[in-house]
Length: 190
Image 1 (spheres, rainbow, N blue to C red):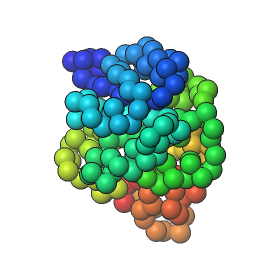
Image 2: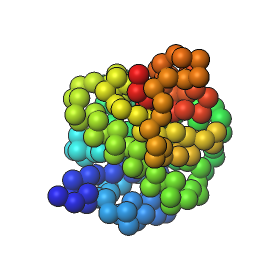
Image 3: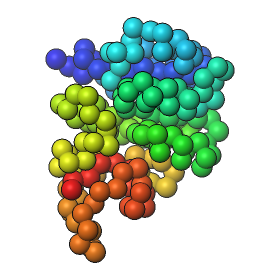
Image 4: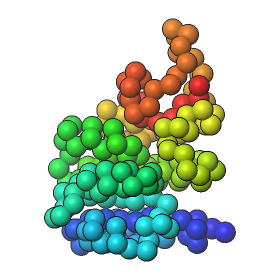
């Protein structure tokens, strides 16, 4: 099967132009996309169970994108999430990434940045599906190398080479979401 028949990307954004533009971009990458004008509409939809990755805006009426992310996590749903915003700031970026977001992108974002985030999200979702019921941070032992690395602005930088299993000090890489590894925001081998 092709990516377009198997992977669904849900886009949650209250701004119609941004929502439709993001949908068109995601579809141009070959994925199926569905849009929602609010977090509440997404949570009430049947697409929730089928979603491979969610792209959500931060500032929306009702539940914000960051609150939506937290609701999903509290329900045990660890789908990969990409957070987008027209008003990027360090507080929102930190909150999104600490809650497991794959990426944090300021609008307007580069097509390539979104594509890199989607690739990382799909890789993570594939690993989650292989280890059904395991939270993302529990996958550290199961993955052979980093899935992704972000720069200081939250842009995904895919690692095309395997990372060493041990740091210069001889300790195993075990950090998740930046703890102890600077800008590292992905999974590492132990």
